[in-house]
Image 1 (cartoon, one colour):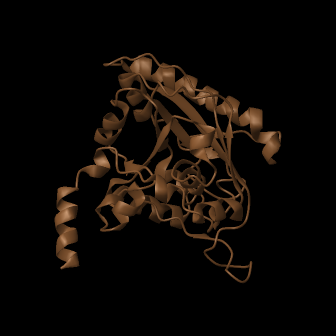
Image 2 (tube, rainbow, N blue to C red):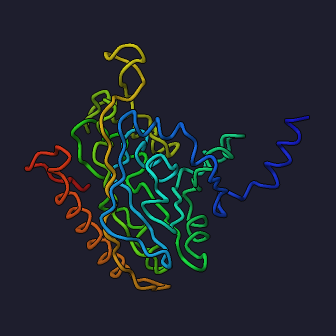
Image 3 (cartoon, rainbow, N blue to C red):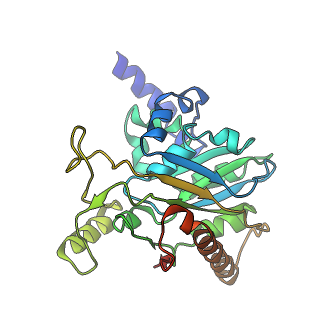
Length: 287
């Protein structure tokens, strides 16, 4: 009977992940998220105010193995997002197939996760009154294959869909860089040209999902396991880039705004890297 009732609910509620999801302030404030934040620890750093009368698209970099900083900072109150950015409602995009899993779909929506489809983005960015922050992990699952300690390689050069969205809706762009995101797991060597990377790329092309072979520490020992290492993650939210609404942007306008976004992201990285133990001669690698 429970299965039948849930199946009916699922059918009636099937479009919700594409219609802004269903956030729960109660679940976002669960005490477990404070423990999650303290384990690494994870910090959220604000460099500029976000106007609650505006809508925003935030590019989150890098993906890391599991986008741990993105989830903890943007989908929970573990680091006090609503206090740091009062009046801003946070959403984070996730691959659409995750929302076809029974029960799990309802759980992830409570934190503000929504489907990573244009329809979903259009729904959130079209809301009147502003105060919506739609975050996109721009490098996606492809970038996860580059995630390892000390790596700063971003898949961004040809990722321009979020730029077109920002122009279409007049949503300001917010660059976000999460220092330490790549440091919490090691990954089996899969450099470009290796048989493993070839195999992972074939899977990526076939099912639109990557399978990074990662490892960390154990529960009671530090040598090997699936627990993440206790290394700090500091997510720095940059200054918004003002965007004028352009319902039908040209490719030239998209390219120009994309170049500006990349430059602002690089400036954000350079301005803060020394605070978070990144070598002075280390720079972002955009591919």
